[in-house]
Image (cartoon, rainbow, N blue to C red; front, side, top):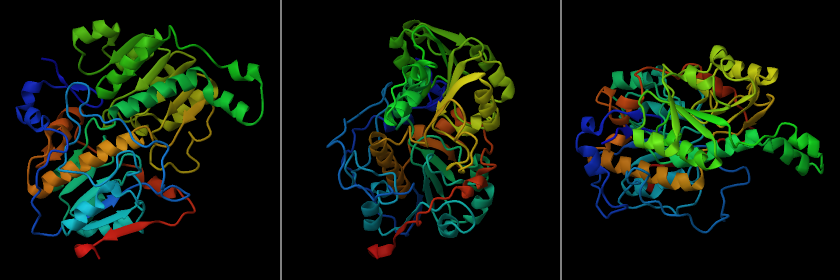
Length: 453
């Protein structure tokens, strides 16, 4: 039996996980089961990104989305008792509230939803001291630093609506014995699709060609002067977990030569199926690849992994794609390599901090195809991670075990996926820079108190 994959790497052996994971993940989706109401009112503080500039949508481009019941490998999608939202609707913004408002109001809990998260005057900072549960997203993270843990005397659960809990100081969470959980696998395929899009975007020089068409031009030579075929290129992933492996599978039909690095080798059958070349170091991989995609978690050992030395060991004219975490790359080193032409392009959707200040060096650098952090928050992904948040909250309120694959920290130590994917430590240093991001839009706060008032 092979190793259990994490989002960003194959970690451990299923035998080490016991039987709980299999039992908890085998239930039917949205099965009917009652969730006991807590006798004590709980305060849930939720940080979500802002609503659209033109207001919360009343109509959508599509009437429905495909229903996914299980992920590759057999893990079932989230299975709360029910959901109070329409899959395919905008749930990740303040007004969407992850579809939790009715559920929490009916149970008599206090529910505060805000996009104001950075700095001492933020709504999050003011509401944190008496919060029992904090919910945040990787796309608009509420950075839980050691200082914030000190202020949050009642905090029991930090919940990531998505995957990746590096915005939480895990060492501090362990010290304060706060449970940290995330919705593992909920948007892994969403991110893998974004990676493939980014690879093609850079290699085919799509953005400049689109800009020429959009502005009324027809300058063919300008469009194609930096455009190549992906076919035959050597493509490598740093990290071959759920996301990295999905990327490799999706790139094989392009007749590329595939490489990967991971702390744990994939099964031989997978290597043969995809014709993969394994590298025992990142340095070995980047020297031979035309395209490198980063699909590993951020923790102290991967922070600034792609520094100036690593980048300059890559082939001249290679492309770097990062949908993992912005802090895995040295921002200045990336910009310098793009400006000097050592990198032909850099794409991705992850920055540090988030939101990135308006003068972030990546915003205007040469050869970039960056977006805000959106790869894992498509409307399809939102339905899954909103359901996963509800499942975790139902378990928390009912004092039932949270799935092992969702756990990052529990009872003062790394647990579940966290024990295999992360190293205990802190990667939130510098997050205070997020307070420099300014948009001239009023902060929206929605509050549900006991009794729905």
